[in-house]
Image 1: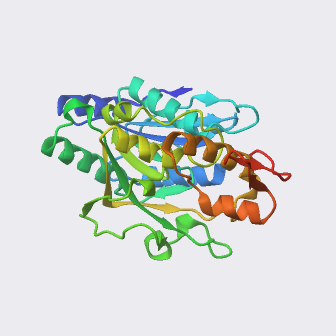
Image 2 (image 1 turned 90 degrees about the vertical axis):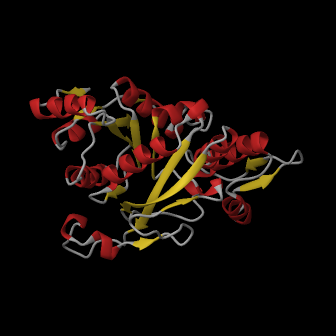
Length: 311
């Protein structure tokens, strides 16, 4: 589904081409979480540099298109649809589809933003500026990929009677303890590609093609992010932590370990270990074993041994 561009949006896109300003797309994959998507759209409407295109991939969710279109800002909206795969949500395939649609719409820079994330007002502009700076400083010769990762800070539940849009999110959110906290103008190389996550990141379409996107054999929840980081390294690429591109992660109920995803986690962990020679998500696997939900088979692979259900 395509929302026709307004005259202003068309003029801005033309100006971008004339000024050689790269076209920027935001890609979000969605199943449910409609209130979270509404708040993300609110955050995008407040951007200092709005996206030129927003690609919202609807995974087995026919209601997403109307919401993404009705609450869009001054940008083009594209809502490709993707069904479940054998009962599972195809997260990796959905991200690939989103970037493919963005590239076909003319995007050169792509920001992938989880539906739970509300972008700070400067997120899109900051990502685009750093990509521009890095491209001028070290041109992507030979297709060497570069991925940017902004900070993601976690929000508590909003107080009774309030919505996140009523609150000072920057003051309310807590940084992730396992990721660096950066100054707003700071860019820092990442030493450990295992810390890549798909909640908020940006790259050029050229870098995306050099990595090859996400491996669509990872179906459902878990493992595809860690695999993408390893694919980035195998392609000779690098990850940069970027200050000033903060996203605020909206609170939602969760479980640890994620027992509702045990089938996905076990299958994806086995695939990852076969490819890279080490186990991701070991804490979850060990916790599943302690709960009697999974066990190591004689061949070393993990197997589901309890009543877990697909996501």
